[in-house]
Amino acid sequence: MLSINIEKRLGQLQLKVDTQLPLQGITAVFGRSGAGKTSLVNLLGGLSTPDKGEIRLGDKLLYQQGKVNLPPEKRNIGYVFQEARLFPHYSVKGNLNYGVRQDNPVLFNKVVQLLGIEKLLSRYPITLSGGEKQRVAIGRALLTSPDMLLMDEPLASLDLPRKRELLPYLQTLSQELALPIMYVSHSLDEILQLADYMLVLHQGNVIAQGALSEVWNSEQMRPWVPMQELSSLLSAKVADRHPDYPMTRLVMDDGNHLWVSGHLAATEKNSKYVFRQIMFQFAPRSQGGRVSVTY
Ligand SMILES: Nc1ncnc2c1ncn2[C@@H]1O[C@H](COP(=O)(O)OP(=O)(O)OP(=O)(O)O)[C@@H](O)[C@H]1O
Image (cartoon, rainbow, N blue to C red; front, side, top):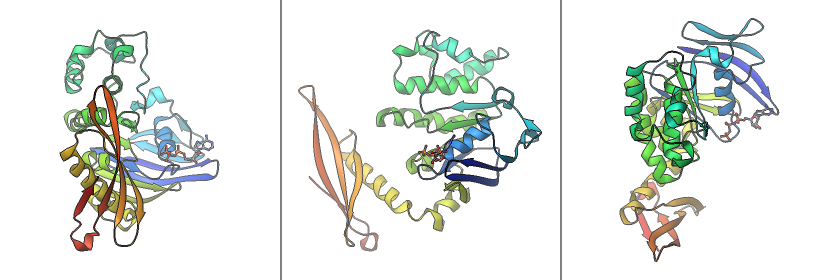
């Protein structure tokens, strides 16, 4: 178990978390912007210090008010940020081995293969795509043999194709390496695909936690889930016709229909992307939730 019982004042926000999380699978940390998600993982990783309380990772005490405060490098926790933060002057191999205390060729080969980065080893970060950089950053964190991996919006800085490219790697990581992962995300789409367990933060407090399906169907998720269903429906519908980049947003709920504006980067024509504004109309779910697309 990961036991967290901490308080921390962050400007206007009082972060107060008293919870126990399983040390297996992927736990998604979800909540609105400013809910305290990043602050929570920073406290776990030792990048900041609680005002009071205690944090235990299994039977290892990471923090106890006034007594113990292990520095990040002693916590044995891997951290992957939004941007890859690779060392530009090291090759991919150099980046991967940074922070490795003891050579473990078996683990090295396994991680490199899991992340599909065999062919990148001699390249330098400047030559890599965003998705490739992020895979290397994940590899670097894994090769320190952490007891837990913290991932703070690891896909947020990537475009949609790169997100799609990375998701399957994340799906296999936790299982293949038997590594608990704490995964901060705004994206319910990502959470649905990855998480086993979910923790919802609201204004610094935990308002729901449990197995994904339980939390997903809970009262606390009502404000989010309908929009999420729509968005998936829309993406599926649009992806049928345009394997490009549907970017959507709710523009109006007139009581009978939800109107969603979609911005499509249509196929490349004469080397120029053609953008088209389209409107989608959704029938309410009581009428079968059928989707009509007009543009
Ligand atoms: N060192 C600090 N001093 C003062 N306020 C802080 C500090 N760190 C964070 N905050 C505030 O605490 C709140 C929570 O921030 P945090 O980054 O943890 O939220 P978040 O849920 O990760 O948001 P986002 O999804 O936008 O990244 C924010 O209002 C932020 O401005």
